[in-house]
Length: 467
Ligand code: ADP
Ligand code: G6P
Image (cartoon, rainbow, N blue to C red; front, side):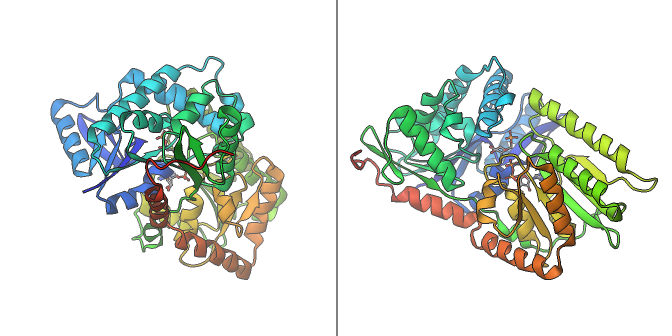
C-alpha cells in the first residue's frame, strides 16, 4: 500500500530528559500543531528530529524510541555539532531572518552552509531508506530546502511535494543569499511546491526567472524537461479542536467585570512584533486615562530557539520592556502587562482565546500565523475582535480583522482603542465573516488540496516548452 512520508526538521512530538526519564510532549509551532491532525488520519510515517536524546540513559532511550515508533514517527538524530551549525547557525541564524526581511539580524560571518547541506543529505538518506515505490513524499519548510533536489537524485521516479511554511521574500531580498541558486535548485527537485499566499508564489517565480533563467508558464516550470508546479495553498487549522467545549482549568483566567483583556500568544520570536505591540498598549493607557485599571494585556510567549543569540537578545528586550511599562503604568493593586514565558496546553489556550476581548496578532512578518485563525475558530460565542498585522499571510484571508501596520505604533494604538470601543453588532458581524472562512478552509481541506494537486502531476511527463 502506498504511504505518505511526511518529512520536517522537527517531529510533531519532542523528547526531552527530566531526572533521567524521557518526556514526550507535543511540539510547538504552526507546522506541528497544524499538520498533526491530518497526519493522525493518514497511514503515513513522519520523519524528523525528535529533540536531544543524548542525555537519556539506555532504558529511557529505549522507551522514547518505542513511543516514537508507536506514533508512526521515525527519528533522525542530530549531533550537537550538526544541531548548532545546521539548525541554529544556518536555518535559524541566516535563512529565518532573510526570509522574514530582517536583514540586520544576519551575522557578518554566516556559517553553517556546509553542515546545512550535510544534514539535508542525512535526511535524504533516511527518507530513501524508508521509501517504497508508490509512496508520496511531502517535505516541509526552510530547514530542508535542499532535500527535494537530493531526493530527486536518489529517487528519480518518486512523487515529491514541498511546502514552505514561512514567507518567500521578494527576489531583491532573496538574491542576497550567497547560496541562492543552490537553494532554488534544491526546491525545484519537487513536483509541486506550495506557499501560503499567491504573493510568496510570485516572489518565488521571479527569483527562479532572475537567478536560473527558467520562465514559468502560469504556475508551471520546465526544469530540465521535468514539470514542476508551484502555487498558493493557504494553510488552515484543525477547527474541531478549537471549536470544542473545554473544561475550565485550575488556572482559569476570568476578567473582572468591566475589564478588557488584550491577548498575545506567540513563540518568543523577533518576527512576532511583541515589543511594538506592548508599546502600542502603553500608548493606549497614556491616551485613555479612563481605561487605566480596566485594561489588562496578557502576553504568553512560548520559549523558542533559546540557544540562538538573536532570540536571547530579543527575550531580554521584551522582558525589560514589560518591566519598564509596568513600572510606569502600575497602581498599588494592578499591573497592566501580565507576561508569561512558557507553553500552555491547548485547552487552556482555547479558554484564553474565549476570555479575550481583543486578540493582538502583530508580527512584522509571518508566513501565515495560525494563532489568528485559532482565535477566530475558538470564538463559538461569535464575539471578540482580532487586530491583525497586514504582514501576516493570514491577512489575505481575514479582511474582517482590524488590519494594522505593525511598524506604525500609533496606528496600532488607535486600532486597539477602536477594538475596545467597537459596538457589539460590528464585532459580531466581523467575527462571523472571519469564522465562516476559517471553518470552511480547515487544515484537512488544505492537506487534501495539496495532496490532490501533487497526485495530479504526471510523473515523468514532459513539461510545456518554455517560450
Ligand atoms: P509559528 O509557526 O511561527 O510559531 P503560528 O501562529 O503559525 O506561528 O503557530 C503557532 C502555534 O503554536 C499555534 O498553533 C499556537 O497555538 C501554538 N502556540 C503559540 N504559543 C503557545 C504557547 N504559549 N503555548 C502553547 N502553544 C502555543
Ligand atoms: C515555525 C516554523 C517551523 C518550526 C516552528 C517551531 O512554525 O515554520 O518549521 O518547527 O516554527 O520552531 P522550532 O525551531 O522550535 O522547530
